[in-house]
Length: 114
Length: 115
Image (tube, rainbow over all chains, first blue to last red):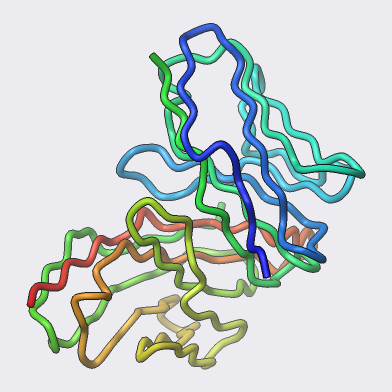
């Protein structure tokens, strides 16, 4: 009964490199949400995807960030040309139907930028 | 826009003390309300939820009542344990026309329970 799986758990990148964060939703879930948690802050919504579609990306920075959820395979959050300010914990959540259905969270990827 | 405000922490209590963590919200529609708990190094776990006014969510001795008149969803527990030490997040999900289910979180309240 695997929950939401995120990998890697920890990721270290140098400024200017690319970071790829992966999220496999719970079995049977086709709705994926990405959130970012900056140090000492709450979680901020970034993007909501269903299979092959971005539904709401209102929380995504306009540049360098992108997300996908292909028909096969995990959802990917991609950050190009990382900067120090991208250091944060990135959490993925999935739900069965979206809407007000409870979201189940992964353990997060902690991204550190040197 | 919609927002959630929690009392600032850390909250430090002795074991078996009574816990209240205040949460108020601002929303244009009729949101669903949630409490999530985060243990060190882990993701968030749903603690309880309420989907309409006057609903009471409860789980593991924790309770919260959806109060529309005061736009509040305060978390309470009658007798805390050391194992309850964690960060607690209040959140809402807009059930309006967009109804994407995205969560809007408060800033979190750290609870420390001492033996």
